[in-house]
Length: 97
Image (cartoon, rainbow, N blue to C red; front, side):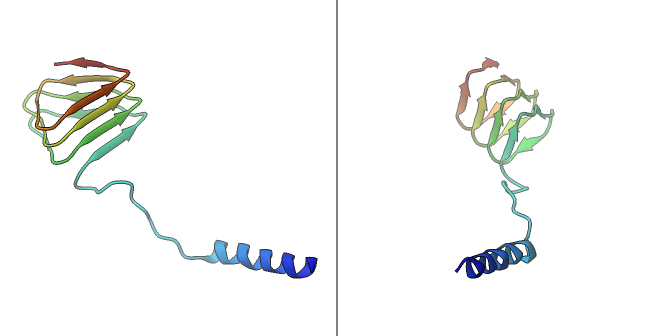
């Protein structure tokens, strides 16, 4: 019985190792921006067509820049000199408008 169990375990491990994999994206390249532990700056004249989420970093929306949806910041500083069309949520951070 032990030999059979070991053989099945070995077969399953080999199957997992040889199983073809593909890339999985956490966000759509053309939409929302999610940054964890990084700073983000939306430069003057740019428009972000989606939401901005920053966890553990700082975010800056410069003058004449625009975010078309929500801005969420957790544990950092948010500076908004441009426009946001959605809701702004800050948890454990500071907001400068």
